[in-house]
Image (cartoon, rainbow, N blue to C red; front, side):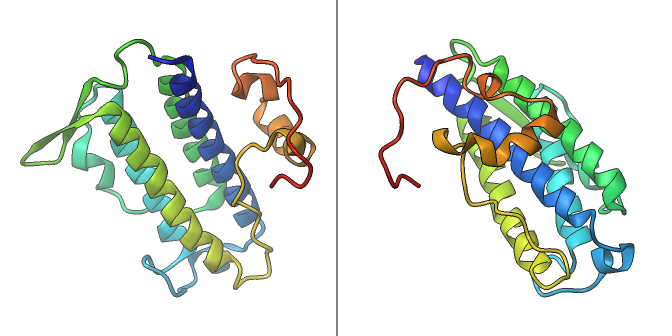
Length: 199
């Protein structure tokens, strides 16, 4: 397995956690009533949308870890009714996903993952399942971002990856998360500066 492939999935996992941290930290500025308020989206509120992300992450990360949690992950549609509960719960599942990606080795991404779906067990390649998890997160974070724009709290910028020349813009978030740039990039030195005007 090329080292770049492992690094790609690791960086996707870290970026996913960073985006969740930024979005939930912004939502912490809402009152409980604003967090629960009915809004236009697939799920009817920020509360329900962000709890859905958490439940689905628990479902898939458990499967990646070899667990059989299955549909029990969805037994409670609102496991964390308040942001102060949701932020650490999401951070915990994000750390589990990062740890799984940190441990990627030869053959890891080719292995078949058993996803327990109640009456059936789905078999899916690990790399495809990971990409699905990341896509699902991006999709619903976008909905939450749009809903947040209708509140008093400015939605945080979530449309960037880890641009080399913009580390200073994420330094505060990284400090809160206990991360460093080196952690993300596996201690690989950046030898080239991006071209002028790179975005």
